[in-house]
Length: 447
Image 1 (cartoon, rainbow, N blue to C red):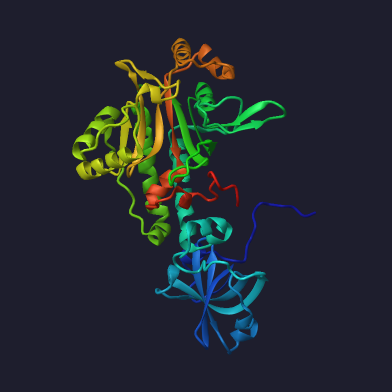
Image 2 (cartoon, rainbow, N blue to C red; image 1 turned 90 degrees about the horizontal axis):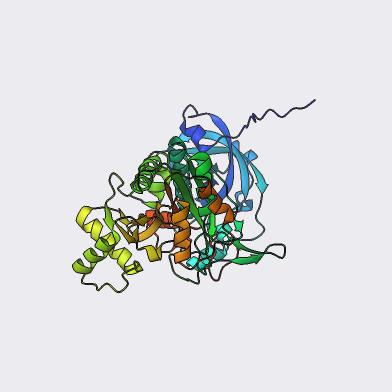
């Protein structure tokens, strides 16, 4: 009888295995894809692309080792191979070692030439071409590194919140009513019933505060916004958390600051390779300044001689100027803008008792771009119903949401972070599509 033990013994090694030490001068086996071939005559350098980076393999014509190697002219870029050879220290190549080839077995070969030169250090092509050829363009070392950094952001979010007593949840993405309201909702037919794609997990994460006290989710959300800008997507990944028994919305900002500090430290320690590939200097997170919405508008209006045109919201140019102001005055990469006007916040946002025209809410700006929206929520049913009525809304479709307040809810609040925007600003990119694996916008449904 054969059994599966869950302990696979692989003969092939990874880059991290070699870097752990003890393989200098020893024969090992590796697999990978041929990233590029540099033929120098008697010697050729075959660069293998692996999940952890690049490995230089030295192919020498003639000699005993050549008897077990395919003819170099038969090797193609993008072929996948299994190779064996001797590990030799070489400080001038990636990862500080190379492999002197003795044997090579071709696992698969491409059927067509590469449509773009992915082995170049930087893809010299348009964003549109990169997106059209996304499964191929992501094989480029720098393009791939962007999404390892993005992995680190999600990993930091999860790790930090687990340490803070949060429970990870998974909420539905098909619903009956949007959490944010407005017209930016994708509608669909659900077995002859009207339904929508969720704009936010807001209702569900508030429900789960009544169960677990602290919850989080990393998942897609959908916005039917007819924006075709460098900062908007119609589907993006939202890093959401909601926490109960808060003293004020300050607790939410403190939790996000802790997440950012933990995550930047994680990136520095465990994603150094990718940071170096992309030449990234991580932002400062020791202390993040906070400023009231109305005060922020006044400050940039006075310093940059810009008139205040919209007293109820921040225009993109104002966000950029606020970021510039706090960088110039405080050397701050991030800034919390608090107390947004009530009329520009969802109905569930808690109004400021001192002045109900403002809310106990905030946005986090990173380099002059909003990457987070959050704040304290209304937890009293009477207060919530009055606000729904005052806005001329109906509670139809919200029965299950309102149920939680009938049966008691603690003071609570939370936030949503746009993962792709956060990655974009961290990497210094100009277009959010650069940091989205497979973007969905006004004109793109494929690949």
